[in-house]
View 1 (tube, rainbow, N blue to C red):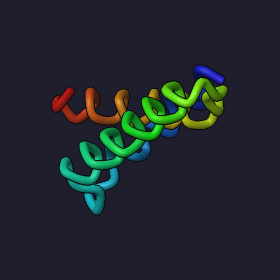
View 2 (spheres, rainbow, N blue to C red; view 1 turned 180 degrees about the vertical axis):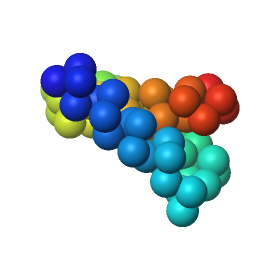
View 3 (cartoon, rainbow, N blue to C red; view 1 turned 180 degrees about the horizontal axis):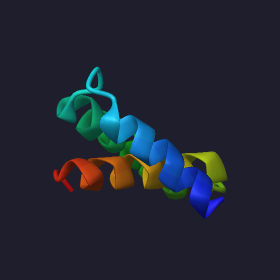
View 4 (tube, rainbow, N blue to C red; view 1 turned 120 degrees about the vertical axis):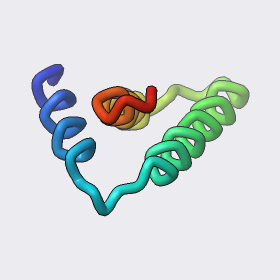
Length: 65
């Protein structure tokens, strides 16, 4: 799975159609939703955590993390 996360993050980081703001907004939305879910004492879907890792890694690869 780690290789998959790295590969997806690399592709996203290299996609110039995705702006730095798009990354920031997606990460903010995910963080807000994870916070809401945890506040409701519900399990956090693993895919949400996976996508948060991917977006963070892509932002770091662009040098904006």
